[in-house]
Amino acid sequence: MNQASLSKALFLDRDGIINIDHGYVSKIEDFEFTEGIFELLKLFIKEGYTLFIVTNQSGIGRGYYSQEDFNRLTDWMLDAFKKENITIESVEHCPHAPEENCSCRKPNTGMIEAIMSEQTLDLKNSWMIGDKQSDIDLAHNATINHTISIGNKKIDTSELSFPSILECYHYLEENQAKIK
Image (cartoon, rainbow, N blue to C red; front, side):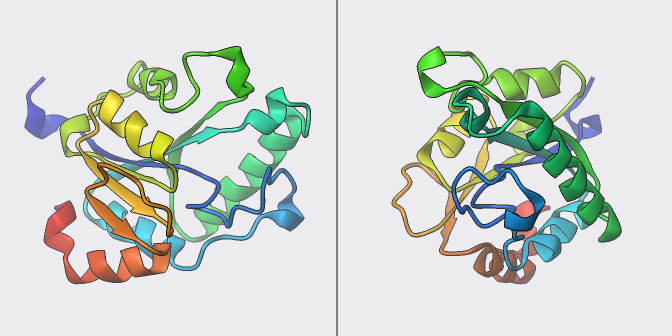
C-alpha cells in the first residue's frame, strides 16, 4: 500500500489532555473536559485525521477503580464526543500497575501495536499529544513522527509544546499547514 493511501492519526493521552487530571479519574462526576479539546479535535478531523486515545490506567491495577468503572466512564466520554460530531476510532488502555512490567504501559508500544493490528495508519505523518514524558517517548518508540506536549513540565524531544490545550488549538488554527 502506498503512503498516500494510508490514514493519518492523532493519538491522545486521556488524563491531562482530554480531561483535567484530578488523579485517577474514574467517575463521570469527576470528569471535566479540558478547555478547547472539542475545537482542537475538530481541527484534526477537518485535516483528515483518525482519532485514537491511548491511556495508562494504573488505577485499575492498583485497585482504585474497576475495569467496569473505566468502561462506564469511557462510554460516557465517547458519547459526549459523538454529540460534538467527534468520532474516536478506539480507546486503548493499559490497566496494569507500573511494577507489572507489561508491554502496553507507555512508553512501551503495546497500545499502538494493538491499534495497528486493526488499522492501516501512516505513523510518519501522525501526531501524539500528551502531558508526560512517557507519552512523547511512546510516540518516538512507535515511530509516530510528530509530538505535542501540554502543560508546564519540561518534556524532552517534543516537537511543539503549549501550556494548555486551548493554546495548542489557537496555534494550530493559525498554523494549519503544520498538520496538513
